[in-house]
Length: 355
Image (cartoon, rainbow, N blue to C red; front, side, top):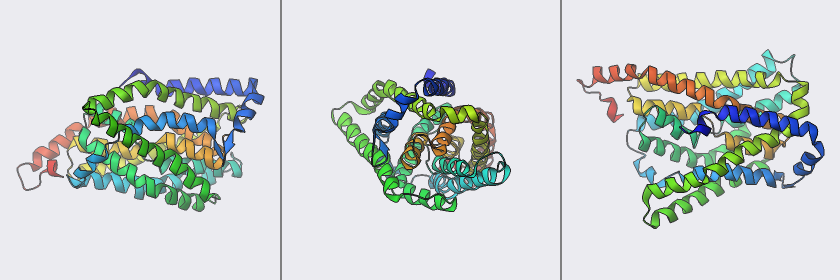
């Protein structure tokens, strides 16, 4: 795990401070930047988001889908948690906290936008960082790649209607044209570009090493894209945050409950179903982690740079890494429970390694 990934939350926190400071000192500059929009898509933010997403998509190997039938239990857990449980629990927790627990502390209009941002996070399963979490738990790299590739293909078709459904439940008006445009811009286009880039690199005979080297060369741009986006968002949000500094804590609370709850569901299910640890841990990590780059991009497109939805997605970035590192540590400490279950069933007809 590189220096950037390990201290991502610190870099994001520093970028937040820089963004708020610049927003207060140079409000006119950021008003001009906010006006650089075409079809409700901010051009500058779009470029920064592409810098984040495109390198990730280069690492998605669609040819791995031929292994989709291998050990299907792990894939079933990933897909059920990501598409049938996680988005709905996130919407439910958002409504519970901001419509009930925090109702007297947050303006109703702002509350709906925070809920919308959390829904966008819940509906976007992780694409890139999960490879880091899988490596830290010594997960099955090939199987993790299959899970991510299947998730990305489903996201192309399911993300927009699922988000529209849940935002409707939260009483948020969804501009369908903008939502579909966001999916095309931030999922379809980077996925297609990543596919052809990967294909070109492999056709030159370089193999997976060439793809890894190409991704490594792009990594600094990814870092710049993420941190610059955070600076922009908080420059626009600066005055509101200074007026209500506790709002970040309020948004973080349901996100934390969601993360640990979803991990418990996926990890516990994997153990009960007899999966080997090398598949169980990454499956639970995929369900817990978020494709926050996509959530940030869509929140900005749908609700604007100065929206509560955009703020909520960035709070998701802030809490993600420390939460995931704590879950990696928990998984590694409980590895023996999976090994003991494997040992107890290898003598019988049920072999978890074939799950």
